[in-house]
Image 1 (cartoon, rainbow, N blue to C red):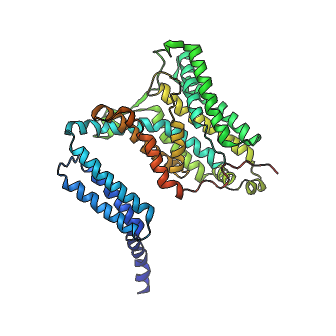
Image 2: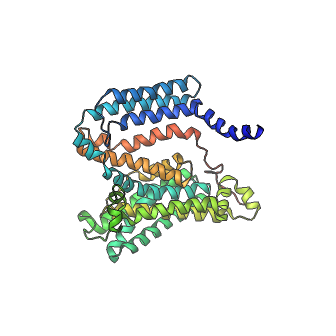
Length: 405
């Protein structure tokens, strides 16, 4: 009998957790999202009562959790449910053809396209901050990679050499950041912004000096797509999404997996995390805090510059001043939202990429101001950070200069 009780106890614990206020609040959030999803393809339900009913159930779940002291998630459930109902009613007032044009396989492809440069910078930011250094300069490193990458590609006629040029530029800016923040122990936030202004001014000056008003050449070699075999392209959904993805998109997927393995499954990852959590203790066991931090900051510059290269001659074929457009800051938000974990950060980048792709498609189909829609990814950043930042714990030593003993 005791054996049966022991075997049943884990199941009973799991069932109990499903009825806790936190679980009910999460269910309410899911119901709010479902309320909106039911009005979209492939469902496209036109009966207003269905999404309203689902959304009200989500709001009641949030209210129930709120009354039992699950305040933050309870409020989120109520808010998401209300927005889900409003969005569903708006969608039901649109033509089905317009909805099909917005919500389609193309939206998934756009999500991956917009998420790719963010993910490169975010993974770089994770290595950076896991070592204990804040890198606000991801934006500038992306911009440097975008300019120097396309410049080398245009001069040599090789997209591979263009990527190498971007990586060298990113490594150089990373080295500058590392020198001032690690060796000189300057304020990491200030140096990060200085890197951004340096990249903005330098790339703008060189762009105008080299290319003038004509801009970059139109025949710059582009980073190619990887074409899958025809039998994969013929698979519904899979073919249209993954049949012709950029080399850089496949590369970032590999990098996310490798980053997780390196950080959490290898000795070098253990050293990296120890330096970011307790550098003095790491030094006492023979780990060089300065070398680990220098390597992490330079690596973050290389990865961020790859994201910039993808922007300029990946899905685009030209360079414009300040073309990174705040993506480095969004990538930094993805690091926080993903709780300094490569997979979590990549998921956050997909979320922001989805917002960008949705805004782009809504501009062509919905009667909404393009300027207003362009703010959607940044609004989503604010909403996501408000909901997560209080529960995210950064590496203990991040932002603190270290003095070698």
